[in-house]
Image 1 (cartoon, rainbow, N blue to C red):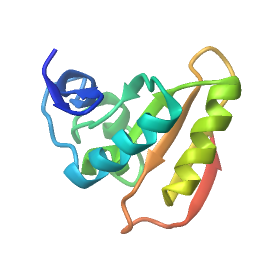
Image 2: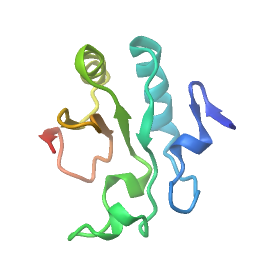
Image 3: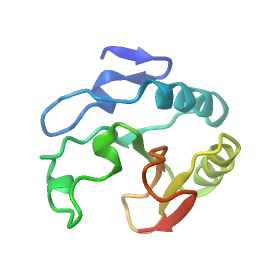
Length: 122
């Protein structure tokens, strides 16, 4: 597993459908700083190419993951609370929260071309 920077590997940040790596280097610096305070942050989705099954189904075209400026972190409970606390400290402008069902995660995004600051739930 090739490490790109700090705590994250190229594999976990690359598109799961094509393997392409296109992740914003400045965002990666912020993620590493957040990880330093939060502890392990398993990535459930990093970069997603426009042809990725999730992106290709979106009515308005590919979303923030296709810019390399978003990541979903598999986290729940008190660790989710800690991640939110630290993400706000680092002024992450776009936060999505899914804390129901078995696939719980928090979306962190920094694409300032999209509405921000904003928080949403899935």
